[in-house]
Length: 318
Image 1 (cartoon, rainbow, N blue to C red):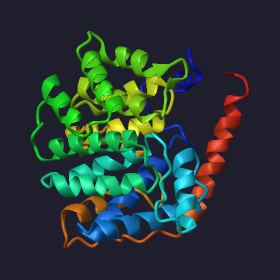
Image 2: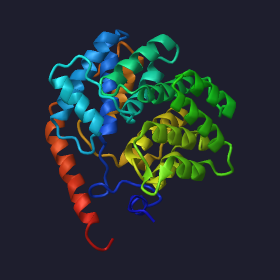
Image 3: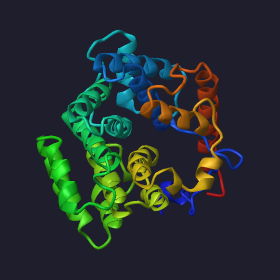
Image 4: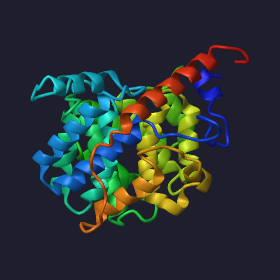
């Protein structure tokens, strides 16, 4: 059994520090996207500018687990390079795109423009954009009520095919269809899109696997997340991608209560996340969209705890 799987003990509960949990960089990015959407209200250029500054400041918080392409893209932002994205097919943009799809569920043009702006801040490979668009398109259909019940595999595949003509993406869509039609799609997905080290952060591995797990467990948030953790690899980001779709499908009440009640973090607390969601849907809602200065000491604390966990895993009992 891989170490990544060994430590994903089921049933899942918070074990990060004293039986409590903290949010990862994936949640931070979703918060920044939401803040940028609220501040820009449909202005793509302003959205890009606000999100770019959030990412610049976030890098100073010493985020643990930041992707190499995202790191280079943000450094380029600090140097004022207009085309800051690097040629990478990482899954960072896909992790940020579900909230964009949900926010522009009825406006396809705005949806694609905002996803492209978010993606190209850090990644320029067409495959990264294809993955991000795919997640946004699925999230849009869930939010719009088109998929209140599980869609057919052909409906899903039709949406995925339309996001990009990139040859590698089209090949991945065919693979998604084959895996979803298997007797055990999750096991098939782990085998097809993964390796001995789990499912990687390569967008044509992580996004297809996230989609397979979401589709198979449609409406079951717990099963979706637990299936991702058992696959190993880039668990946090793949869980964020699949979890965004599962959360939109199952709604807040479908998320296990202890997962939200035992989340102890600041300033991106569950209270603030709820306020932020209200700000996305109600122009009159009062919510802070500033970059919180508390993220600087909080980021250092989080990184220290992550390092302590890493040291602990090197020591017996294994």
